Length: 296
Image (cartoon, rainbow, N blue to C red):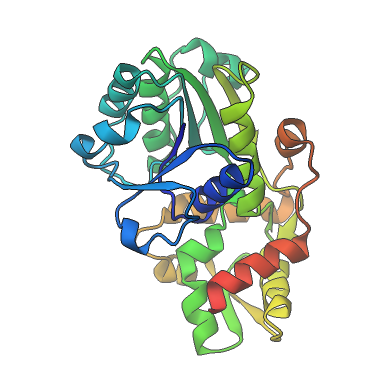
C-alpha cells in the first residue's frame, strides 16, 4: 500500500491516478474526501499533515509514502516517528531546489546528513528542516528537490487565473527569464519511480526540473494558444512586481530567481529521463494542461 499526501493537488492527483492505472494499492490523504474526485479504486481518507493525530490510521499498513508538505504546520519529526512506528519502509519527499548544501557534493552531503549551510530563504529552510527530520528517522528516504523555476512559480505568485478571467493580458516581471516548467504527470512519474523501484533510490537526493526551457513570455503565449486565445505578457518592473506578488509567495526568492535566469537560463537536469525513461511531455502538452486548470 502506498500513501499519497496532498492527494488532490496536481502532482498528488496524478500520482494516485498513475498508481491506480498500474494496479498498485493506493491510499489518498486529503482534508475533504467528499470533494476529492479521485479514482474509485483509491482508498480516500481524511487527514491533515498539520494534525498529527489524524495521520496514525492513514499510515497503518502502508509500505511507502509520498510526502508533499502542503501544510506549513507539519510536524515533520512527529510524522517521521509515526511512519516508523507504523512500519513504513520508504518516504519520498517533494523538497525544494532552493536548498543549499555545505560541501562540494550536495548529494553526498544530503545522504550523509552532514550539516548544511544556513539556508538562503524561508522556502529552503522549511524544506531543509523536513529533510533533516526524515533523514534521522530510520526510514529509507528519497528527496526530490524540485527547482523553483520548474514549479509554475508565475502561476501561484501572480494569480494568472484571475488575470485570464479578466482579459488576455498577463502581467509579471522578467518576461525573458527562461524557466523549466514540468508537467505534473511527469513529476508524478518521477515520484512513482522513487516509490516503487526497490532499493534503486534509497537514501538519495535528485534535483528535478522540467525537460524544456521556456521564457515567462513563451509560457503565457503557449497557454493562450492552448485556450484558443491570443494572450500577451506585459512586463512589470521589479518594484511594481513585488507589490503585485501574492502575500503568501516568497517575493525575494522569486524575483532573484527570475532576474538570474534572464542572462543565465535555468538548467535542465536529466532526472526525469534517468528515473522514468521518458523525455517528458512537450511544451504544448504542458501548456494544454496548465490552460485547462487556469481557464476552467
